Length: 321
Image (cartoon, rainbow, N blue to C red; front, side):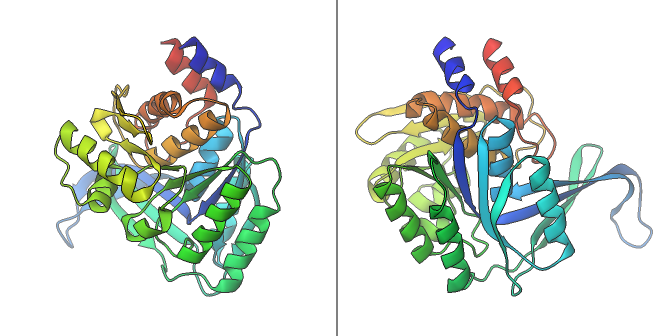
């Protein structure tokens, strides 16, 4: 634990590039006291509204709140949601120079309606066709203009930013420059990820990517062991109440039990995991040590409502018990 805390001290100012699908999260909180006379649905009396960075932007927010330096790359539309997303990103001290406007796309939004701490409805605004070659070129060019970055995180929500040719360029660039490449995947793009340093699927994603129905610990192990040779990458499977399973090339698996005490909301937990993994690995932690740190961060995140990033002080406190 003492050594792990030392890694946390080295998170400060580590430069991490995050590229992927940018999402504006909106939360509408209120009270529910009656059912609508128009349809059998609850009426929510709105008390407050909150905007937060989502998707790849939430990964960047977690990097910043854990004291790293986050550089964000992605696409937004020419709309009011774009301005709100940029404002929320700036509030977390995220560098947004790598964000470009695409007039053919709308800024992705996810609106969640929450009453009495329970999510009642989610509304999505999105257009998921792939971005054009010009925008891919701009994203990659600006990414390669960064200096002294220790890791690149690809946050793929399959909303159109990450394509095969873009990811191939990033893989080649990361390999040539000895930069860690960490991918939070979507099964649709499984063939794109081969050869990355680390891939971090959750249970649902691992099922689809491996073709194995996961119902227990043994199934997680089978899925991870199958994915390592298929993807030619290290694998960290996030397993909810079972914690994490770490599969490192050339080594046996490691199971890390969850440290979560109360689970209020799992949304954004994967973003927290990949952000803390990137920082811990950049600080010199082994993959298994980084996974222990990420597991603590995830345990903090699921105790919060919404895609709230984890603070370094919270993570330090978690290790102090």
